[in-house]
Length: 201
Ligand SMILES: C[S@@+](CC[C@H](N)C(=O)[O-])C[C@H]1O[C@@H](n2cnc3c(N)ncnc32)[C@H](O)[C@@H]1O
Image (tube, rainbow, N blue to C red; front, side, top):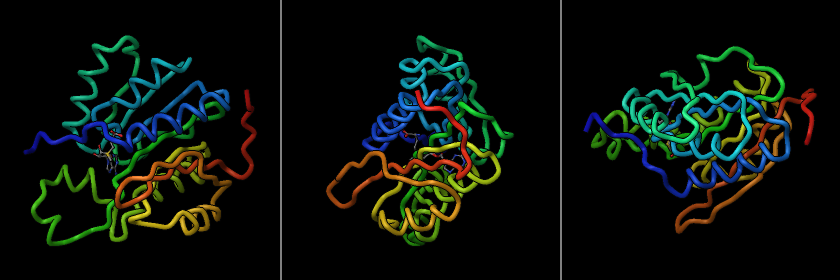
């Protein structure tokens, strides 16, 4: 079970659609995917978008290996994979860069989580309430890295209104895509620093 990594699902495709929407609207040349899992999103996005650089990170080393192998056989193999906690491996990337993240977004459940392998908990559980990991990346993007980011959240963990309210303390925030599932709604948040000088296409 040490070999667990997250396989593409509804949230993966929501992340891809939302990120591609931003890439089309803004002149994007550098894309960093945080928590890349299998690498599906970064591979598809870098095949579709005219990027100069693409990076992918994951905290799960096994996911990094899988993503690396898949990237090697993809049509655009120029994607760097870095084992990292969130975006800690990045310095400010400058205009034209965005980060994208489909984080773990379920709330902690000590009894159920105890039955899972560590890499499963890392993939599914986003913190005590579930939104904390995605929120940490969004606020790091806005305050330290000063780049826009696309981040997925679930209504299981936080309402859309509360999420917008909390993140709007750090930058401009809007919902750019949604997906209703049986027990939850997934939504993609786009955040941008207040003083961003980024050009639209
Ligand atoms: C819901 S899965 C999404 C995987 C993939 N991006 C996708 O959409 O199919 C969340 C991913 O984030 C990774 N992850 C969780 N916490 C992380 C952290 N602090 N830093 C980097 N990656 C993390 C997990 O290992 C997992 O691969």
